[in-house]
Picture 1 (spheres, rainbow over the protein chains, first blue to last red):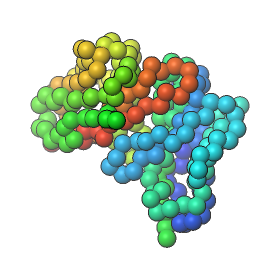
Picture 2 (cartoon, rainbow over the protein chains, first blue to last red):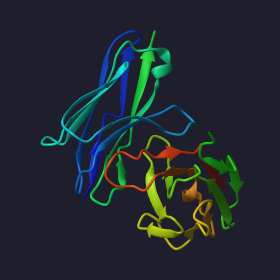
Picture 3 (cartoon, rainbow over the protein chains, first blue to last red):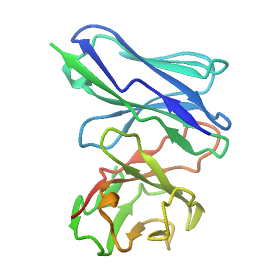
Length: 109
Length: 116
């Protein structure tokens, strides 16, 4: 079967750094996505990794290791507005997205 | 430019009734997806259209669910004989033709369906 695992909830402090992990087992791999979803809103695209390594985009970075079936999203200089759910999704051999359940990130002042 | 739009934003109906949910994708996006999301869960795939045809409907839970995209743009998700378990947020997303490369999916704001 296909499976995406992420922690259910994490808490971090404003101004700090947090790393959200994602492990996956899918039928084929054509890239991994991270989306942000604020409560009551639609998911919005954050990052895409298809090759191993780190992709940096401002305060957010995403890492991929295909051999380990592992990715993480790194958020630096946390702001209160970063409180949201972060969804990991893998594009499988049919080019369809398989979604994790999301990690709810709580930022405390 | 205009993003993905969905109507209605909220729909309350009674068990056993029929509902239609509409999605208007980004102009030029050939791929359209319907998902269902329950609280605390990721999106659950329902159906994917490439143009007018349903390329993958393997996520539709049963034959009460049906979707169309007759002109390759607007899509309607139809649910017959609604059940309380159908209550969820129904998300629509569109993208360029999926394939290699990231072709991110752009999501609409969703329709919150409540079946009483």
